[in-house]
Every structure is written in structure tokens, then in C-alpha cells.
Length: 537
Image (cartoon, rainbow, N blue to C red; front, side):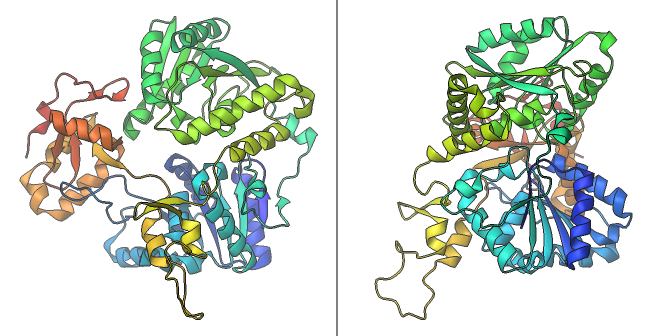
């Protein structure tokens, strides 16, 4: 089993190809947590392979179909000639292709979901090279299942598993650790790493949101560009509005904006950053900017969160040497006073752990090599993070019959649910129940199409009688609507339903009526001019 201690680019992919060839592996799987990263990786791999017949991309559809209770729709692939359709659908069932490009969700579903389609794919993992990018994004609640699965794949399925991350989780410190030996694919070399040392994490203390806005103005006075990353969408929206009057151009990026909206803003943002003569550039964003976005600022400010988030933000700072030759750009990590993260418990735990690190660093900075982003700092952070978690929190906690159990217990001794008397040759594990309860992320959310750009026109077409009766036409429209969709939480859906802010389309999808700001995306506040796009063909 191989472990990679830093993010892999195309060079890492080449190394994995060499590993597959030299050890006789059957296929290579590239796993990414985000579609933005997956798209970038897919392009690099396709350019290198030059034969699409050898490559299968598999990731989820963004639009859920169904009536009043939306459900997940069937997984789809890129539009292909009709004579390829049956073959492509079969490949989705069994992953029978030399190169698989997929998401972390699909990999974990293949390992633990009780669905038959996922189980058919499991055989493809045997005798393969499995590259998992940004492994720190594996939900902490699933660390035990993930570690045990990697152990099984490496020891019994003869797979080579490569874990890629700039902040390698200390999984060896968990209750169910990775088994050794684990070797570094790129061992630490001070001379090699020095080339990439362009930023410095700094403890920025604590400040209110208004004080953070003032601090942002000060930072922008000493630099031409600044990125501010928030934990919550409402924080980002509030800061964006308060900073729009800065001497320069202000941008906003968050998951409240549909992918098409974010793409347009990113293009304008890159143009502004490339043209320094046009003035200063400020971007206020959420964590959507932290991975899979190739962008560079002279200064960065991150509201305190986990070490992985802080390092990812640092990866957007001085990326292209914007601060000058050999300059080390500061990345401030600031604790936001009065911040409420009740709906974001993982961010809260990460924030608490990094504040513990800051306290220890102030006491003895030499213990961490005088660097908040050193390997020693990252290890200490994960020690604090895991120590704060209650027993069983990494084992996949689930609610069963008013009990709080874990997926690990259901798949092992199953003491809570098994009959008191069992025959020794019976399986005691609750495989079917565990599979039905397994989900990578809490899915109490619904994807809706928003009235932004072409989304307005698509909502009208999807609400037409033709879309109701022509399934092929509706399917094509839903594919086009994916970039114009956002994911909303249940409490947001409930409020919108009470206010009449949602439209159930005849095609089975759901659309947003108004409630979309052209600068900041989805908002629970009503927006003017919300109805004209609801016309039908």
C-alpha cells in the first residue's frame, strides 16, 4: 500500500501508470472528492491517453427526479452515439474499463452501499491501482470504515492504494488504523520542498465580522489582491456587501451560486487578477474556492476552520509568485467572534483543533519547526481533532429504532440487534441494514434549478407540456440544467414551500421562483422580477 504525502499532478499520474505496468495491475482508478477536480484530472488523463475508449467517467447527476418527494435519478454518462449506449451503461454497472475516473462518493458507495449496482463494481477494485486525491475530505465519521476498507483492498485484493493530500490525515492514530508498511511515494526532501514554500500560516487572533472587514481593507492596502474565505454562506454574503466599496473590484463565490454562475465569476476574476493595471482585486468566498480552483492571490485571510481548510486556502495564495520573487506571503487564520457552526459540526471540530494547535505553537514554536504548516503541526492537529471525538464517532454513527448505533458495529459483532441465541454457522452481521443506512454525506438536501442565465429559459421549457410527454426531450433539458442547479437544505426547502418559492415542473424536477441574487446566488429573501421565465412552449 502506497501513501503520497502531497497532492499529485500529472507527474503523479505517470508514476501510477508505471506502478500498474510493472506490477501487472488490471486497471487504474482516479478518485476525486469534487467534480471540479475530477474534470481537471479527466482532461489531463484524456490528453495523455489519447483514446477515450479506454476511459470511463462515473459521477452523479446533479438533478433529482421524482414528484413531490424528489429522489436521486439514475446515473448518467456523457452523450454518446446510440450504438454505444448499452455498452456504456454496462460499464457503469461493472467498471470494466482500464481507466476509471470517479468520485469519492462513488468509491465509498461501491465499498459499503447495499445496492446491487454498487456491489457489481467491487470486483473492479481487485488487482488495481486506486489513486484517492484529497484524501483528507473523507468524512471523519467514516474513518474507521475507510481505513478497514483500504487495509482489505491492499492485503487481500492485491490493490495498490495511493492516498494524496497536502495535509495527510493521521489515520494511523485512529481506533482502526491503516496497517503497515505504508511508504511515502515522495519522501520529504528539504531541497525539493523549498521550491514550493511561498506562504506562511499565521495566527490572526480573533475578530468580529465587522473587524474582519476592516482587516481585509488594511490587507488590500498593502497588496493588489486578497482572498477571504468564510465558513458560512451568510458570512461571505455579508462581508461581500460590506466590502463592495473597496478601491477595486470585488467578487463573490459560494455554493449558493450555481456552477454556471461560479464559472462566469471565476473567468472574470482571473481576468482581473491577470490585469493588475485595472486596480485591486478582492474575492470573498466559502470553501468552494479551496480545491480544484487554479487561482492565485497576493494575500489570503481564512476564518478559522480545520488545518486542511487553512492549507487549501494557502494553496490559493502566492501560487504564481504574485508577491514577488522569493517572497513569503502571509495567510492569516482568524477566529470569528460569535460564529455559530451548529449546522456544521465538522467545521466546528476542526476549528477547535486548530485553535489548540495555535495555543501550543505560541508556547513552543520550535516544537513545530517554527512553521504552523509543518508535518509536526499537521500531526498535532489531527491528534487534537481525533482526541475530541467521542467514542464511536469515526465508526459511522446511525439511528436505528431510536438507538444510536454504528455501521462498524452492524458490520462486525452486531451485539445490539442480533438475536440472543444464534447458531455458530449463521452470519450475525446486519449487512442489508448497514447497506441501506450507508451514505457518505448527510443528504437532507434537494437540488433545484435556479433562474440564472439560461436557467430561466430551461425552467420554462421543463414546465411545458412537451417536456411532460416527451421523456427524451425532458432528459436532454435536465442535462442542460445541471450547471444551473443549487443544493438546498430541508429547512430552506420548507420555508420556500411555505412562501410559494418553489415550482414543481412537469418533468419531475424542482425550480426556484425568484430568491436568486445575480451577485451572491441563492437567498431566502425574495428578488424582483421572478415570474417571466415561467412561460411554457
